[in-house]
Image (tube, rainbow, N blue to C red; front, side, top):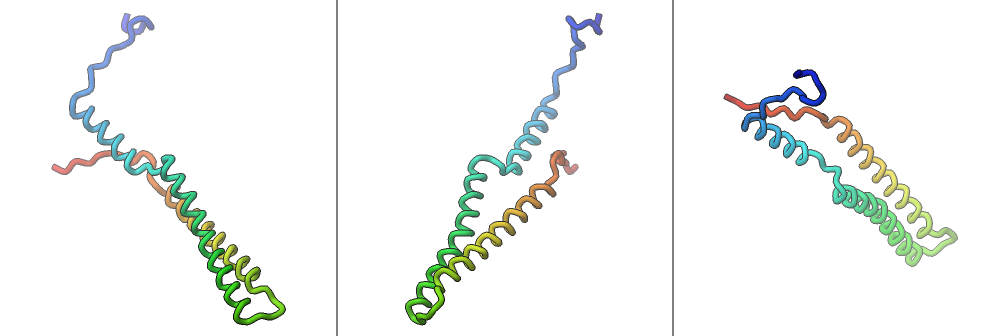
Length: 116
């Protein structure tokens, strides 16, 4: 009768040590897993600033050059585009580095090792 679907085989309840180990394992995994909503929002902000700051610095430098060295070229536009390109490269590099780090992170390597 142990094989009938109405009476599944009963397992003994896990020991206290097994329960504590499983909870510790879940806690360690949660601490390592930083892909929550706040992490995502923080990353969006960081990427945004890594593009915005070089763009604004390029525009400011271009405005200063246009005021002090007027000529036929628009330094503001040229340096704004250069700052935008540098910012986009910076963001791309940072995102690639983070993606690589996330891929290399061990998935189920949560075995707790107790030292005797």
